[in-house]
Image (cartoon, rainbow, N blue to C red; front, side):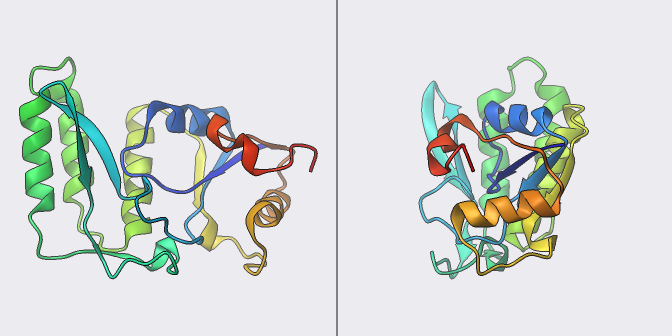
Length: 179
């Protein structure tokens, strides 16, 4: 069985979904530290041909908090503003009519927990793309949470009875391939 493990990202790049599609089980690594200025809660889209950075506003963020302990800020117009920006920027794009309702559904969901919000969004996009890979959150796997980095990944692989670990190209330098 092939497994991949990655932190959740908001509306991630195509390679993220290629990785999900390439494995039998995809583990959303939601019980590790949040990375400020990473891609967990932000992304870019093209607006008038230029990159436009947007983010999900968060409450009391800290790199000392675990991803699944972070909440999305309430009482903010970010959802309405982001949907308006996407609609205005992409309304003439091919397949806009088919894709925008999915994006709208993802953004308008009521979930306040960041990890759950991102898990929902990834599952919805996979469903649209007909990717049937099993998706689980690492926080739902009973394991030794005192382990760090490569050792924690290996533990998850053993628990899930994986015989192959597939990593995104950018992450290959993080772990010892022989182990």
